[in-house]
Length: 312
Length: 283
Image 1 (cartoon, one colour):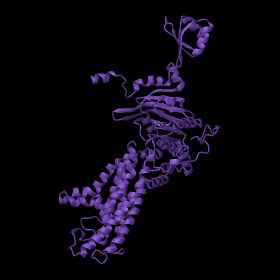
Image 2 (cartoon, helix red, strand yellow; image 1 turned 30 degrees about the vertical axis):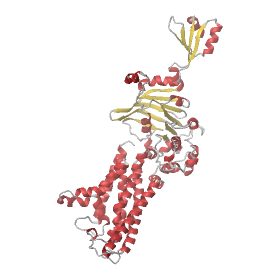
Image 3 (cartoon, rainbow over the protein chains, first blue to last red; image 1 turned 45 degrees about the vertical axis):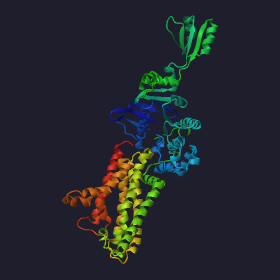
Image 4 (cartoon, rainbow over the protein chains, first blue to last red; image 1 turned 45 degrees about the horizontal axis):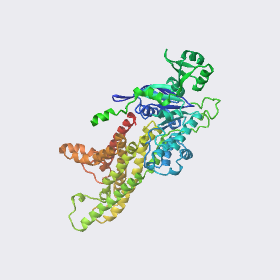
């Protein structure tokens, strides 16, 4: 359980996190989404007490992180991939962290195996690939058998097998009743594992919602129908949970709550001719882009005009 | 929190409630973690070895040089005019303090440059125990290594200069105190290095300030009017430290006890600065 209230972090003039408030609950995977520079990493650092909030507060399982007797048992965090001394072996790194809490050697071996680091545990961490480094970070996060697992961009640098491993790990941790909080700037990654979404942009909360609600609000899974008799088709399709919109005088209708197949069948049943019947699934990605468009820190330009002008 | 509420949940939905090991961060555990961290890096072994070699080798070289200078009938060089077996064999402290001080900087600043500090501070979010543990663990290790080195250098060095005017034996008044003082001085240099590393959070910055404080500042002070020099100079870290292990003292130096107190004062100052920054700034 993570509780943020009016959490704010300023670095000089720049406000990285701006009055953020949210709750991350146990038993589900919560995705923490936002474009680069939205304040996700800063928020996560504040959760584990590495950065002090300028104002506001954040607690973990009812207490500030630093006030817990065994912090690693409350929150296991993967922050940036580089939180390891490259000269130390993976096992010695984990061992040093375990010693601060009196975590037995057996548990170190367990997480080494769990993270698939068995064969390289004695190698210096500096020689690790990005993916291996990421696995070591995750092993460290799991070390204290924590109630809350918090991972910042965990799939960065992982191969497809590693990505699948992370997904399974996250869902199984949540199924065990733990709080799982995962950040990403890619909706496509998060939507596969997360039920709940906290979306931020420029340090502010944009949405605290579920994957399903987000799609619905973005007008997802609608069907576009064109017919000669929109008024009759409206009557035929009307029902609970069905929403139909369309401009007066237009042949086109936007229908949500009924599948294209059902619409076609009903129209045929009532002898209403259709000219067009298109399922229009708004992807989560689109919904996310729509939501964060104004909050994107660095817009990339894809227009060619700039280059052609400078070339001339 | 959940251990107190007897919820009828199954173990699957409440992993935290039942059979959860009671881990806890304690001062002793942080110490043991820092101990393990120190020895699991190759740089520790190399730098400590280097410190030991500097201490013994330069002491032996200085003693041999003195002996050969006498043998060849040259008039005693100015540096060696008041030489004793102690001052000759501790000639290497100047070099050993660099090795040990630099390792001290690496112990703390190295965590910032590599990012390890984030893991460390996430495990011990109260932070200060980490600083105290690093200072204690590494200070003690440096103390032991330096003391061994000082006695080793003296045993060899005093044999070389036996029968010369510089000869003193281990039983001679103040010799053991000087050798222990050298170990203590180098142990404290190591702690100062660790404190500077934590204060500046940069390996290069920490080493620069350390070298400046121990080696450059005395030279700068010698540019001051001589009336000031006499007042300031004995209290500088390097001069105060040297009086801890010098066998002979005169009016321009502090007594070993006073020198130790002043040098301890510098150490505490550096540690206090490091503690302040550690608590006040983000990791």
